Image (cartoon, rainbow, N blue to C red; front, side, top):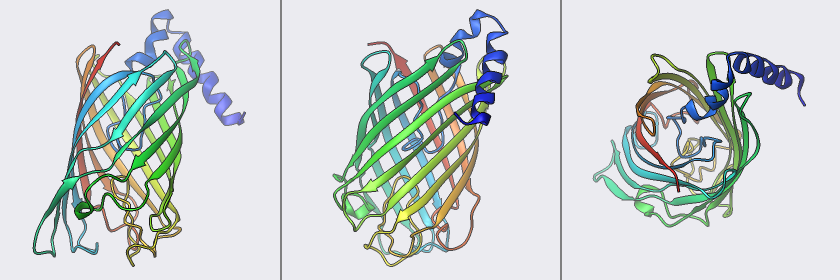
Length: 288
């Protein structure tokens, strides 16, 4: 095991375990990521429904000359056992309003779902590691850049740990396109949050997407970040990084509301899709 990771786990165990057995529930008290919800997966095995809305402002340097995208979605997760969950993480209705076009476009998004399994969990150290696999079904409307190609497979790892008062959550994975017209990606996400006044959780994120293999659908360098796969033929090797700041409010023991503001940390060719984005969601957790 990497020495830095081992040291981090040890510090986590000391910081959490020394505070008493009540902190064995620290994993339950953590919050789920807000930004990048389509690919940033919480490692915990939880049953929940999560309606979400995202407003995405497009830069003028993008091929559309700017505009905006709005997503209305509903995610669902169902714990089949205490280690295994069924997840449905991408769906919804897309409203795409390009600046340099005669008409706006609307339509349904692709659907993505799969399974995740928590292969390591230490509640006394508030640490968990999960592996999962999703498949994105190309069943959306092509008017909003969905329904193209043959879909993609998304193997991923996700983990969380407590470091003193800070909760860390991370995920990393690949999105391998089945059709060569689509692009393939590597994703990395990291979120840090803390708890204030028992109900408020400020959070900051870094979200990265790297194009492993360019598609052949559009002759541009800018690729989609999470919602879109443009199949951009000039995007290979390009890395896009977004930062975000936000917070969750614990409205009840099983209800969280969150909002996050996302902004680009990379500029220039390949990073013109995102000017800024606001994501908000409401999480309702339950037992089945």
